[in-house]
Length: 202
Image (cartoon, rainbow, N blue to C red; front, side, top):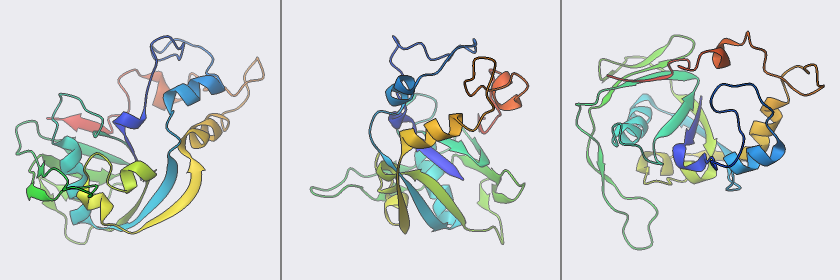
């Protein structure tokens, strides 16, 4: 699975990135504008179901108010409850990068992998649910945005810039009429402006 902190994704309003769903070119300059920080990819290995729930309780603690710590996701579907108890994490002590969880959250209703395996169901860990490997950027993997559950986990660095990974992903699409990598209009992931439903608030 993959996660990306929302704060690591930027969009300068002057850039003509086709965020409205209209057809348009995406340049290399656009990808740098979108992912500007020089963060590198990291694999966070052997994330237990309990740790995964703690990570998403932190993500969902901000509710729908917005914030850079909210995680963008792939490889799973997550449902959170607006009226659940928000996880509370203390302010990091002097010299520390993360605080500690002082209130366990109850907002995460379910986490389901794209292959159908349930990790959390009705707010409870599913018996026999697997541990997972999560790919993210080094800022998030190291507990950035005050994620103590992530900071404590084992990591393996790829050393690949997160902008490069987006660039290489875009290049995997077949060439269109102009000879540029082109997302076909039949691709369901991009056809609907409503998205794939990876994340849902209830």
